[in-house]
Amino acid sequence: MNSLLTENNPKPVFIISDYGRIMYVNLPGMNLLEHLHVNINDRIPQDIWNEVVANHYEGMFTLKLGDTKYQWNTKKLPNGFYFMQVTHILEDNLMFAR
Image (cartoon, rainbow, N blue to C red; front, side):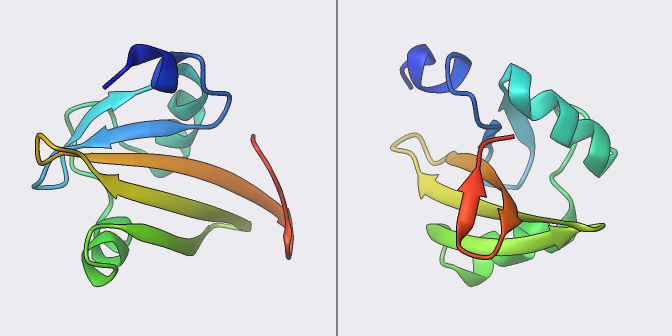
């Protein structure tokens, strides 16, 4: 994966293994990891992984964490891992990168 797509992305970006383990997080994603109470190399929380599996490992879903809604965009990579980009939803139909 081109590092420019992940490191310079202002939105949280995760690379997740095919078993749900967090392999990479860009700098904006570190705050979200803290909010999720997980670290790199931990498994992504089960409620998020369940949504990934339910969406056949690709696509978008919205998930509320605490009082905050997030849109998760997941794409399967050629190596079997998953690219996840997360957008913080401030209002319905109005999204900004956090």
